[in-house]
Image 1: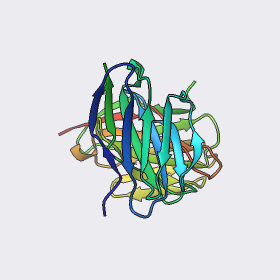
Image 2: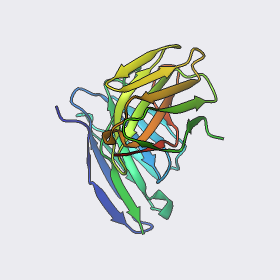
Image 3: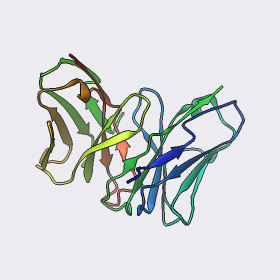
Length: 113
Length: 113
């Protein structure tokens, strides 16, 4: 079975630009979470979506937004990029989110110049 | 201060040696997850612990959650080069709703052949 997939793998943007990252969950999983991992740190929670509804949001500015589609795939959007947004963006899926293990994708490496 | 502290930050062992990684929480855990990450890649799920005193094993890796549910240890027996990577513990503080995980900074394990 296919695991969590993310696209693109790598992305280079300049300050002020906007970026969209995509995630497809494991088949049958209805919950998608997004994490940001800066070099040398553990992943930090950004959003969780379940059944197209936002269920949780981490301590990130409004420049970060996300949505989930009817097929449970998800997009993370970041506007007005800053140098500090350079990171590995990880997507995780779980069956429902309640006491369910989160399985992570390979990540999208975003570099902001 | 960090809610979840991992120790040591890095570890170098000779192939065949045993090792232990610790994860200490500043508050009670509802669940504790262990993941492994190759540099710059996604997280691979290892084990999940929920009950105080719980212990789980998979191949040569054993994880325990102490009775007070504030500390976990990950023990690798007879380490192999394939065990090398970054080990991350992730805490569920959300009362079982598991809409987000809070991660430690990780422990970098190097296994020398």
